[in-house]
Length: 345
Ligand code: 8NA
Ligand code: MG
Ligand code: MG
Image (cartoon, rainbow, N blue to C red; front, side, top):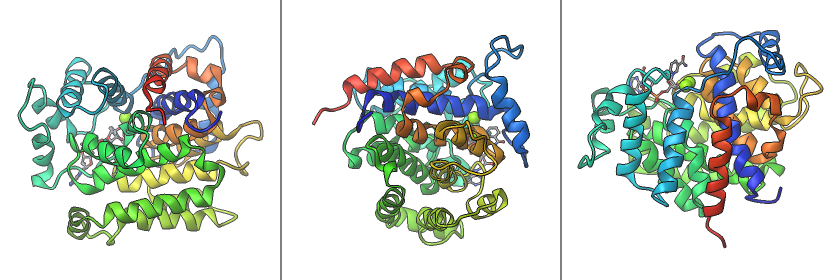
């Protein structure tokens, strides 16, 4: 489809659910052999698979809250979104939430809380969380706002409801921007795409709060820009090993160690790659490649799935895979609703 087509919208949200559901199998695993990944993915083709449906985790649970809040409030409403996260957690606490964020979600379970950003600010002795929990749910902001300034602004605020450290919320800004650009067709020119992200993040990371958090955590001055430059270096190489990707970009639960990784997975898998099945197309390659990296596989595949889905569109998601994932149909319908509301030029 063309820029911001309905197929791209649906691909973004279905791709995110797919990544979360198929990635759950390997979450926290240190090393994941490719044959185990392929076995897992091939199992999704079985019409009468015994394992049943793959459940979604916190990534999708919170993404659904973001979508519902953006739709029902027709825009960003921090009180509504915060309460929606808290309610979802209390109804379904066993979705694999990070151990820190649970405390925020419990405090947010008060309707009409005066300052909904306060519980997040109290995390980790006032430093705030740098986990990828803000980034994992950032895709819908790219589907609700057309202007890239709005995408940045609201992705940031939406993440700050649980992640007040700039290394947490700026990961959400980066993820939302990647989905935004992908929706516009920007992945047709991968080098331009990565340069654009670097340029955007240079502006984002020059803010004083970001500089201060980077210093405090002993990161480089522009941590996300630095990682995006590494993504660019890896893109320019013919051969890249899994070990190098992990050591250069990371595969952990920090936004800094997972958002640039997810972006790299998508970029790397735009082309046919050795070691991945020849019958796989871009979407399947992105999923398989995110899983062999190990670590926070559900979240990396979820973020990569959203960016890749916005590029390839929903038709690139194998039907059998979609049918195996809890919440895929729902994500598909939500994407249609968001597309109807997407501001027209
Ligand atoms: P979070 O805000 O609780 O952060 C996740 C974890 O990161 C915390 O529990 C801490 O260990 C650490 N952390 C974050 N900020 C700081 C800080 N300032 N100082 C010290 N430590 C810090 O939760 P979240 O919403 O960011 O969750 C992120 C991930 O956790 C998601 O991938 C989600 O799926 C989940 N999760 C991951 C795994 C895994 O093995 N990778 C397992 C279960 C849950
Ligand atoms: Mg999860
Ligand atoms: Mg995770």
